[in-house]
Length: 622
Image (cartoon, rainbow, N blue to C red; front, side, top):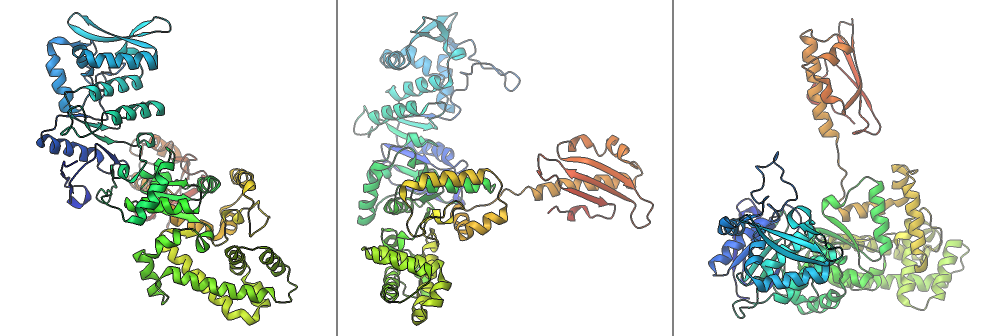
């Protein structure tokens, strides 16, 4: 649709002006809180006004005036608490339109029978209610009647927020006075199924109002995966992705390969998968057991990945990882993936990242073939040589005999290669001891594999060194080379039970999960919330106060410290415990003050002490 947008917000996106030559019949603005979506929408409103569109903007506070109670303590009370003053009808409408509020929807229903009929049909057939608009003493009041028990009640005071939302939004969607509707979080208060119903009504009416006066333009700000319906690359172009630190992005064109692969996966994306559109840092994994385990592991370690904008999303296979990865990159979303060794031997991920500029630069810097596919091809040739050699050896080592047996039983060449590679990478010492004739070849494989794993990592694809996730489990002692798919659910349940028991120390976790934790932390951009700097800052103030009061001879004991109005020990009630102040006769040290941190901020309840010589600003807890 040839409608132009030009938005500039001085304190967002380094002051860059955002220009877009055309918009879709429905445009979705998605991204985390604080990324500028609402500010963007407000400027769009002004843009579209200048292009002669009749716009209704409904902000996220649109139910103001329709509260069940009047909160006089926080406000001056709602002027609509008695109903809608019909003598102020035009003022209410103007105020609603100017400030993005929805209360005047009920005035619209009282005036436009065609809209009221449609709203009554929705109420009756979906909610078993009927609508009555009463005029009482010069005020309009909406009432609903339950068709189940015949009880009539005032909508404003007794109906749910969700139904108020739905009826208000539908009124403006159906109102032909407007041909452009801007909705800020239309999902507010709505059950998922009603979100989908509202979206279906929007889609039915959406279109180019310039060509067809019965159609409307919609711009939707949403945080709900239920409010997106992206089933092909044409739909994909309806998205504008927001990020707090970079300018908004969208898809204009896709190359032929991206278009083909993305179009194949989009119809299979459901509401669960839709969450990746909202995540600045989605992490794709192959299966649901991978997602369950990674989330549990981070939870036990006290790492909240959600607050970092990370969502771990299982996509159902290595080829799906590639499709989702391509889709995210096309939208300039910083996607990551945690994958097993399969990506080296088959799947399309390696083809996708071969053209990644960072990967090419990394390989060139390492003095290797800058074409990742050729480098992987040369690794496979090395593996084939070792496979041929190991089958002909007379070996008594149990590990190598197991590997030889698996190779000889396997007919698929890539599966043979995977077995030998896993063997070399995880039993290197055994190979070095018993395959001296191929020592150079073995070291070449290890060196190339390390570089290939690092090349994948440059593209934010993290390859598990131990093959698959289950090989890291405490509770798994089965076949290292092939995990039974049917056992994955029970294995992850056992592992999660062990993690939940909290019997494992952090050192034991580090020892067991080895490089897995490193890969997860890199993929998930993991950090722990560190309270220590903030605790130290408060302690600095406390120490300074105690030192000052002691110097002024106003405290000489624990009791006088507790009674001091200048220190105000009550302020520290939920911060410090067991505070003890002891004066000393020592010439060097005049007093010592001991305390413990409160359990609510320090589960270990660590103990500390200070004297008059302690420098408050340098007092740090460890």
